Length: 237
Image (cartoon, rainbow, N blue to C red; front, top):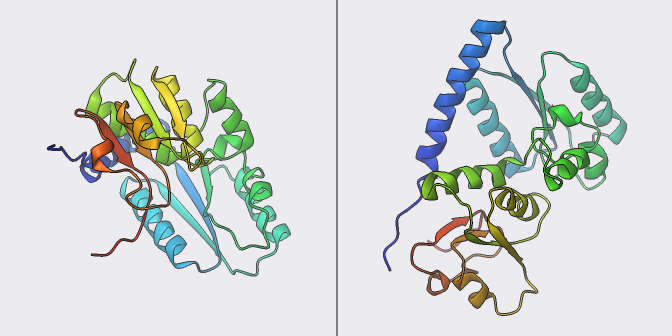
């Protein structure tokens, strides 16, 4: 079976160009420049790469990037005080706390200290609840990006059978909710799902959000189906 690659890099480049145009228009019409504050606690190598990338892309589209790098031993009170200052800062319109945090910090407490209106990751319980109940919400970036790719590749998603493999709060659950909002018939599969191959074989859309490489086999995919692999896994070259 032949396949067409969904070119995420090309789509992202076009999206950044459109965002840059909107930022320019906003600045010209209102004098406002959007600002994103990113908080990194510790020196996790992967997190450092993500933070550098986010800062670079933020600046490339003309927004202000504010990076706050704190040592791994930073206490909870100090981190919460920083978030409180960022919540009150009119130059900061979005706040992102890079995860994972060091083990001694309560991630849920920290995330829910962010103002819901500035919670660009969409992890605050208020935004989670708004998404689940169909209200306007800040939506997690990864599932939203997947939805945009699927719309670009398939057009109207109404009536399509979708399978989301994975039930994490970060990707799996919000992905399912977004697909429901686009009128898909959604099945959420996971490690305890019985006969996963047959579940996947009937899907028009498959979103794999699991930390295991090659969990979904090519033979499971029906002709014409779209597959998005969200997992980041190291495999032999």
